[in-house]
Amino acid sequence: TRMHRLSLRDDAYVRPSPASGALGGVALHTHDAILLCEGAGFEYVIVETVGVGQSEVEVDNMVDVVLLLLSPGAGDGLQAIKRGLMELADVVVVTKADGELRAAARALKQEYSASVDLLRPRRPFWKAQVLTCSNTSDADVGSVLGRVEEFMRAARATGSLRSKRQSQQQNLLWSAIHAEFAHRLSAHPAVRALVSAHLS
Image (cartoon, rainbow, N blue to C red; front, side, top):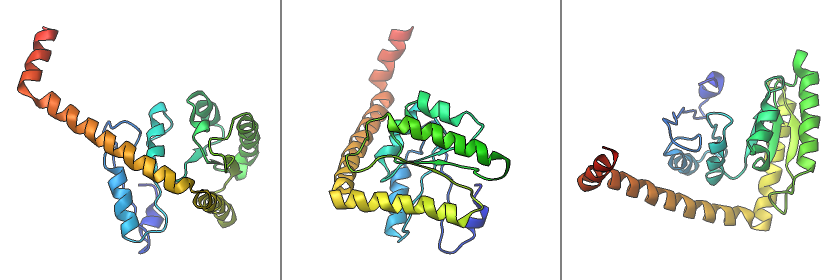
């Protein structure tokens, strides 16, 4: 993990979970790990996906708020637009907004803000927020956390959070049913024989 300092804190728990080919950019039992962390009393549970990709939309079925992190000068903004991730993001954070990349970060923020203005808000109570952040600035990090907490207050007040979690539970249940059915079907001798015969 890249969060060595954080992982040394007694009040934090950092655990990498390889996706191992699972769709959605998250490991198969990520949602179970989220529930365990919540049950253990952790106030914030952060799920980092494997990267920008079309299958990353699955992570929205597990979390309350989606943060999209973009790095200036890496073409992340264009990739996010091409892959439809901007429609998913509740908060967009342009990182590395310091030093030589400060100007590039501000330019990417302006570009992304203009793009967000053209989109219909995904949630009736919230318009995606675009921020810049330097990881060396406590104020910047605090600003990002403030926007997340603002989103959560609005989601709770409107009932959207409860509705989303109910929908997530339903989707995860069906995903588990489909996965188990596919596993049992693929392991059945008769089915395997039929597939072999069809491919031969």
